[in-house]
Image (cartoon, rainbow, N blue to C red):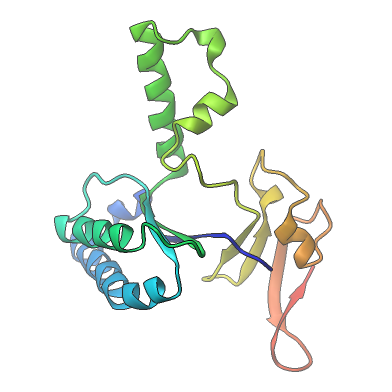
Length: 183
């Protein structure tokens, strides 16, 4: 399929509502998984980066994320983004606040605010809009058109044979017993 970017959503901002012991266990699990996989990712030329806010994350996890990013900085293969302490609304609010500060400082006028300027202030402006969203918990694949404002006709959607208006696919067992896509 030629995937260049992959984002793994490991811990959303909403997860902070969980009991403290559960949050601590999840943070430790994420840190251990990254530490255990980074050598193999580096060997495969995967470039690793964090997506989300660094606030509230344990220092040991931040150190592991920084180590992974530094180790894989020059890799040229798949770009893997680990969404930890990530929330879409939070990201948009932070970008909008940055634009507001620029307007207040007089370096930008409200008329100069465009979708492109907002996108430049997101956590990872180099990260393209998603083509396909896969939900491992429920087994759904969502074409990016299921997310308001994202393009309907994308390479990933065409690769799995989705018509532009299709939003959700259900994974099921085919005749061979292997996963099949039904839409």
